[in-house]
Image (cartoon, rainbow, N blue to C red; front, side, top):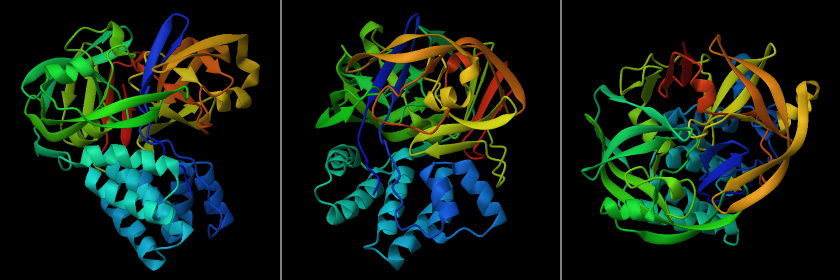
Length: 418
């Protein structure tokens, strides 16, 4: 079965730049006994866009149809299809995998009680799996106040700015104003301890986690009764809470020691920011069209399909990353373009480590047909932690700043740049 581990925030620092990442569920597929080799291989490679395209040509077996619905955040379809898989053989390995994907769907949408219910069923079958036991601690704390919900939504406008390579937007939590990092790569929203106290939030629970580089860390949970972006109002908004001495909060003042993660972005549904410093939220979606998605989810982390060197590749989309970096899969596929091999220091919330890296002189990428370009991009030759993801890199705010306007539409599951 897939391993599920709770992790929190990390900040990776290369010479002269930094980025942050929050990981809440790190998963690795193990699909012994899957029905057909083609479907099995696509899921094992976590090729969600390839799986979608295969299903457009051939009817997908139920589990794979459910996995597609989960990856493209079709929540009702995923719940129905994967629920049927579980009901058909509740003690099977396939049912375990179906529950894991339902946990992903429920967790990233803020439905923590449903995620906890599925997790408990997995624990009934696998009571000694440490990662499941650790995840239960987090889920139990988050589920105490009930699920996150949207109580009011209307188009909202505000301003955004870059500070120390990070994107900040205004927000009101519990009636208290702040400017927090907007981070698509944050699988859990996060506060520092003093920021949680400033907001009047009660800390609860205590859980272990791992950072981006695989270092161990500890965290608590807090639930904000209300969070506002102008006329957009969310209730029961969860945050992980870490010490002020942890990155990225150590150098930030009060009122900025917060990270807005993917569950909040999904609840608002649509986001559009422009180079002139304006940001729009909660406007009407372009509408979902099956087969036109260029966004998908790996657990709770958004992926974007983009074109490099006339080839479609899948990248993590991480607005919390100040700088784009490319990963070992890119280095293996395009070794000829790499130069200046050296060590790069990766500093995460739990510590630092040196990793073999290189640089790519020019990185030209097409997203939704629009060209973006960076120079001297770091290429990691080894993964920073134990996780070996199949994707080609992590696209940060430095790349997105090249566009005049960026739109994230999580209803249509599309990203557009102009």
